[in-house]
Amino acid sequence: MTETTTAAPENGDAPARPIIRLDGVGKNFGNITALAGVTLSVSAGQVTCILGDNGAGKSTLIKIVAGLYAHDTGAYVVDGAEVRLSSPREALDLGIATVYQDLAMVPLMPVWRNFFLGSELRTGPRPFRRLDVRRMRAITDEELKKMGIDLPDIEQPVGNLSGGQRQVVAIARAVYFGARVLILDEPTAALGVKQSGVVLKYIAAARGAGLGVVFITHNPHHAFMVGDHFAVLKLGRVELDAPRAELDLEDLTHHMSGGAELDTLKHELERTESPQVAPLHAPAPRES
Ligand SMILES: Nc1ncnc2c1ncn2[C@@H]1O[C@H](COP(=O)(O)OP(=O)(O)OP(=O)(O)O)[C@@H](O)[C@H]1O
Image 1 (cartoon, helix red, strand yellow):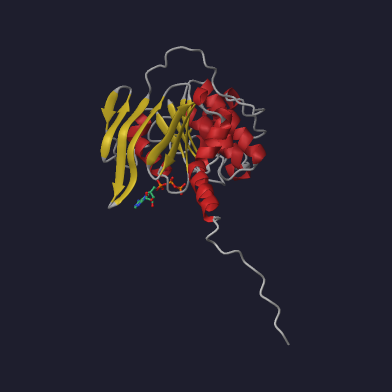
Image 2 (tube, protein in one colour; image 1 turned 135 degrees about the vertical axis):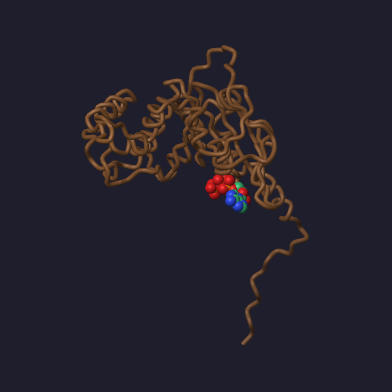
């Protein structure tokens, strides 16, 4: 296989204690079971990919991890202690940051302003405190450079950036504000090949900075470029849970494309082609 990968090197060391562990987690909405018995770990310096089709339960899972939903069953463990989060703020305080697809950015505001959105730095004595524009610009510039992101002008509105660049700014922002776990909700879903590559590169950079990354995606190719561990969700359950060493891109694609179901369907179709089914004949020409 010629696929280039940027996965973490396997060094044979015993894995460190995970930052996050879900143990048999379930969530119901009325009589709909969105998740059931989900067990999953996220460790520092590792990219955990969560794949699944529409309705598989990916959003519900990240909303539990991000503190938006409380789980109904099982345990959510952070740094070895069981938690029950009741807001995204609590998740952030534990170092768990989520970058959603819509990114929560203000398109007309400059890049540096979006970088500090909601956590602006201020200067001067009360009650005359004002935004510390100089320091926010300098930090944004420095942090983007640290991640290897080269934007020509951090004064430009964030809406002028490409989708991939905006994702990358959001990743750098989460790293700067102390994330230990970064949850990325389908960051490459709306992007072309080149822009997806840019985002995948910075997912690898976040892992390189020691973060535990949870990468939600529909795309097994993207997952396999950066993933250290893969979980495929199906109808709310973990259908496949494997470290990189135990599978290849073909296995992952097979699982994602409903490979097992397609195999069954193929066999059923073969059986249907039996002699009981009368062959079709062209109607005899009508006599005039
Ligand atoms: N707030 C809700 N109320 C009722 N049912 C819900 C709610 N949120 C999710 N569900 C149901 O739970 C199941 C899992 O949905 P979820 O959105 O987590 O899947 P998903 O994998 O993120 O799908 P997609 O890729 O389409 O976003 C689906 O059957 C969905 O209809």
